[in-house]
Length: 362
Image 1 (cartoon, rainbow, N blue to C red):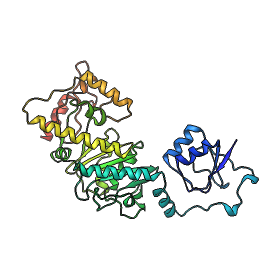
Image 2 (cartoon, helix red, strand yellow):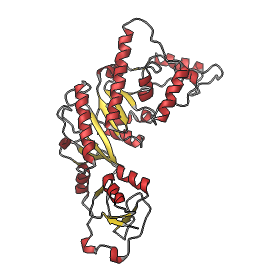
Image 3 (cartoon, rainbow, N blue to C red):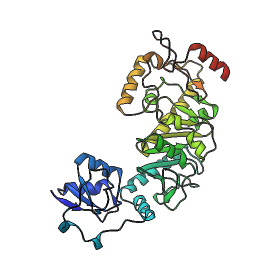
Image 4 (cartoon, rainbow, N blue to C red):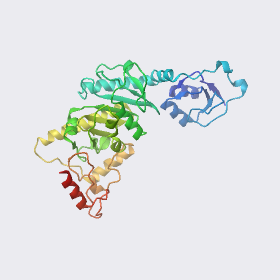
């Protein structure tokens, strides 16, 4: 079994391990404390590559199975083994690693796209990407997205502590970090102030479903979170109840935040929801009712969405409950109307209870 020594690397990327596999390696020697990027972990899972720690006193930090160090004659002498990097230098290495560069370039492109489409103004909006389990690349504060460069980006942990980078992290990092804590599969998030979606947010209106297929598939049911002071942990926690089932959340009196697998896809959802809200506004000026997608056709769209791995709060509803709600005011999730053959809706709210709730609200 061929072994390749990568013990001099403090950060291992997918490219590093792919090169080792291409060279015929089945085992790779790594240094103690090495950081594996997400693509490196993917290579390990896909190829079954075995990682061997060159530190015999501890377990391998990698998610691969534990393997004992090789025989003494194959092991590097203690004096030549790399010492673990101080955490600050390690974080700088991650932020400036070859794997991070294309991600940072994508963040910059997304920032300029947000600016060009007038979804942000001044220094507004922010973009993040979760590069490791506990490290997130984010945009800095007090910088226009039109002027953003890769050198401006910084690295934070999931508690909002800045680990690396020249610029000071965005004050709204907590909002993004709350998504990563609540939705483990989320890898990127974009917060912006697109005018039409924000118009819905400041009037407390939730756009309906079952109108435009692209909206229903890629965004779906939109949530709206209550207002809190931006930049605070309290503000971040307002989205906790919604993040798992909604990749797009309107922020009351503020804007919108979207999460996805990449910054580009998260920005797409910002585009989709803002275009949808704009279309609804234009349709309202025509003075005619908006036609709705039939429930059986909406069920087909939900199946497509499920195959794409996208979240939706409408998964599990009966077909007759998918398109019964008009545009609603406020962030309260209203229980779907009960189907004729089933007196109770999915929420289990009785009709008299719902009427009482409506009276209380109005």
